[in-house]
Amino acid sequence: GAGVSQSPRYKVAKRGQDVALRCDPISGHVSLFWYQQALGQGPEFLTYFQNEAQLDKSGLPSDRFFAERPEGSVSTLKIQRTQQEDSAVYLCASSLALQFGNTIYFGEGSWLTVV
Amino acid sequence: LAKTTQPISMDSYEGQEVNITCSHNNIATNDYITWYQQFPSQGPRFIIQGYKTKVTNEVASLFIPADRKSSTLSLPRVSLSDTAVYYCLVGDVYNRKLIWGLGTSLAVNP
Image (cartoon, rainbow over all chains, first blue to last red; front, side, top):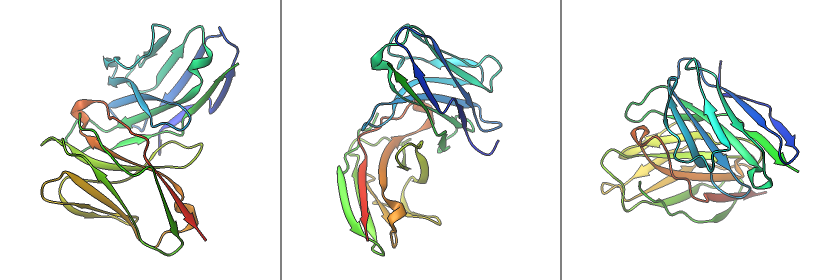
């Protein structure tokens, strides 16, 4: 596609519910990132994929957060047993490849509100 | 990972040139400097990226001195629609993750 596409755009979940956020990166982009952005803050790194391999998940805040990219294209970020502190914007980004100076492009984000 | 420092906020008026300076004293040899723009309720949008000297595209210029310890994003003739948060980031894709600060909140007034 023309850009990074994320769905749903907005999600309201009751505390304790599981949610799944989808990311469709730019076609052909090998690298895929997930970031979390709280209100008034800059994005914070969650996890990184190179094709289907999750090479870095050091930013995932707890074991309730899980991300996958089984075929090396679409990725899903899953949050189990959501808590109020999970309320944030979840940004997906992709990059052509791990090459010097490559640009990372972001999607519009999925806004999660846990009530 | 190099840390960046930039002003929290700036004010300007329509038609003026705006320069936002970012300090990154610990920039590494492999690091690029990238600027993003973010509007409320939207994801960050890539503006410009550079390694050294000057880079210009259709929306902005990026000035990087020889020591690369700072950089300046220049927005020519801003309009109301340029009101946004501007983030300066230093790093490269080999690091796999970028450290984002609070950015600079630019307000363009009529």
